[in-house]
Length: 251
Length: 333
Ligand SMILES: [Fe+2]
Ligand SMILES: [Fe+2]
Image (tube, rainbow over all chains, first blue to last red):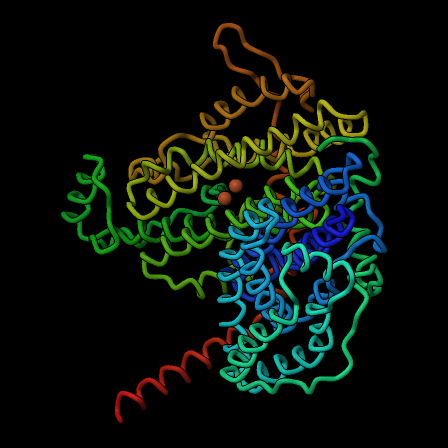
């Protein structure tokens, strides 16, 4: 098992957490109600904590003396490996919640499987993080139901969000050489196996929410190889400003 | 924190006359015996109103206070700092929740208190009308603003009103955590590059005087401290709390290698207190009246969040109603 594939895989996991956590943190103080301000900050905090652990592991496999902060704050957009869905701008609350739900449903399956990884450190991280992901999924799933089966306005906003985000879900289950190498080494689960469980969760919640699942069509791709949307560069410009403008400083 | 606006209001004399004199005596006797007053107990109208005002102002301050710090969450310079700040701002939201709940025990619904804030009828701590211009401001807020909040709030843990006192105990524990984290952030900057040191000094220069103002006007000018003292809503005077804060904080600042923006600041050997120069109360009053650097922005942000969130709250209510209907229909089958 080459360390480069391992590094690459951990970056994908860690970057998705980092970028989505960042997006959620943009809500802080501006949510529709106080309870949601607290809940979104809490999910952002969990994801940032997961990113911290996963990127630290990635840095270890890279073996070039970088740490989690160096990976988070001193890489350019093209070196990020997050899923494109994570960098989608927040939009309205329906958009944020739908993005979160589609992601949480994936993360629960992924971490559940990774908890049995042959990489013991990763299994440990996943075993703890799966509990957080389950809690996040309960929160986002309940909101999808409330919005979908709420008022006509909330229903149409939730449906719009689902339609816009759907093309970003295919990427969660992409397999390439990196994934194949990790699956072979029993470090990572087969994405196809995750997809069926994810689909069940999504179908159940969408049905309860009276939302229509979009027809499967073209799926966006590129995040896993560093081809991102325009949104990521703007996000990193904000996120990385201090470490970039004070080279070598400790915080 | 953030009980400062309290002493600014005119006293409410009229309500008191309505209260039964014997009940008042009995009430005061309970207070004097350090008994806690609970939500269903009889209480004078003035006591109730003072508490509602103070607790709701305090709650509003926690909520508005999320904005200046939230301003730096997306620019926190390390993963650890980002987590600390997220957790802190989340705590402040939680403080808002407990405090609104404590105020609700006095018969005012949270929605009504929030409406008053958004309508500009309720105050919140003026400290949050200052901008957070650099990362060091996050350290300065934790160290000084949370630090001043603790000084103000520790006596409130012994407040005569039970739900408020109990909320305060929990809140104070978290505020002191925030204070330590803020100071540790400042320490990192003070030991850092020249740019970081400059940032730290600039933050102290800007936050020092506003922090001292958080304790409210001098006792000489404070209108109805004495009634609140008798009711044990307020337990230590503004000036005493301010002095205590200065005595604790000045050596901490010196340890950081920073200077305070007060040329008259000096240690009085005889009393052991740090004596300070005059506080610019015209600035305080101006900001209280609405003309601070960020008053309008802060309120606009709260109003926008509330307005943008209306359809979400309506959806949640509509869904809850649908669910309840379905359950009723099912039960009737
Ligand atoms: Fe607080
Ligand atoms: Fe605090």
